[in-house]
Structure formats: structure tokens, C-alpha cells
Length: 188
Image (cartoon, rainbow, N blue to C red; front, top):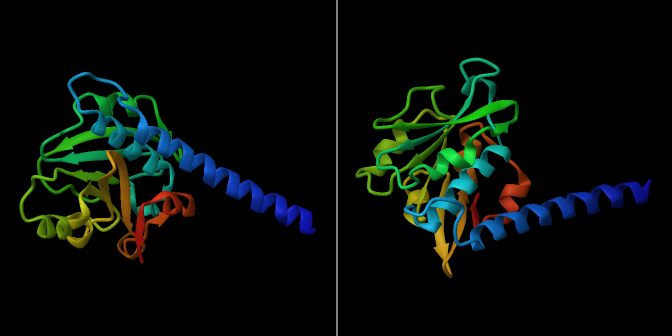
């Protein structure tokens, strides 16, 4: 019995280390694709896709059980075609992953992940208007203070991220412990 428990525990540790190594490799790679998009946004695009694999949304987040999982970009799109290429043909928890570019706060069930352009003004008001079950992602430490859930930050020229777990828990989103373990910081 003890060896089985040790084996499960060790398997969990190895999976966590594999996720951390993957995310670190992504943050070290100079480019994902696309010459005109800064390498930083190639890495962020890969992170956005990976977030969809480590978050569980409540059923009411989708209009129907097999609806696509939409990553929406609100405002200016810094990703260009790279985000489309990264998610092409990808599936997360049985949902095809799609990209939507939007110019106003999304309606309920239309987006599951929302990347907010860092140049948008009055961010707290915008985030407050986003449907509660949408994973909000932005840039800089101020994004979490303004009510966002995941904020990309640059640390030693590497893309990292911070998580506001209290905000995501309050929205009914379940973030995997593996995702939490590779975050730079987690606000509880």
C-alpha cells in the first residue's frame, strides 16, 4: 500500500516537473513562429493555449457541451497570426480551441479566455463587466490588482505569469495545481 501511494506521489511530482520544464522551455525559446510578431508574444500565445488545458470551466461557461473553447483578444491584437497558428487543430477537454478578436466586452458563453490589450483604458471597469466564468489574462502586475486572473510579466527577459487564485476561485474556475505550481506568484 505504501509503495502504491509513493508511486502515485512520485508520478504527480514528475508530471509537475514535466509541465514546469515545458513552460520554461517555451519561455526560453526565441520564437514560436512569425517574423513580424515579437518573440515574447509567440511565447504568450503558447501559454494561452496551455492555460486551456489546466483550467476547468463550469458547464454554464459554454452554450452547449461540445461548443468550442474560445480564446478572445479584446482590443489591439499583439499576436498577429501566431496565436491562430498555435491553436490550429487544438482541443482542450473535448472542446475545439478557437480564436476570436473582439472590440467590446464579451457576452456570456462567447469567450472562455479573454486576453485584454494592455493599452485599454479603465481596466477595472472593463474587467468588472466581463462574465464571471471567463478566465481574464493580461499583462503586468497591475492587471491582477485591477481584478484580472492571470498576468504575464517579464522577468530576466523571460515570460512568466502571476495568478490571482482568489479571483478565479470566486468565478467558479478550477485551476490545476500543476498550473499554480509553475506560476511566479499566486495570490490567494
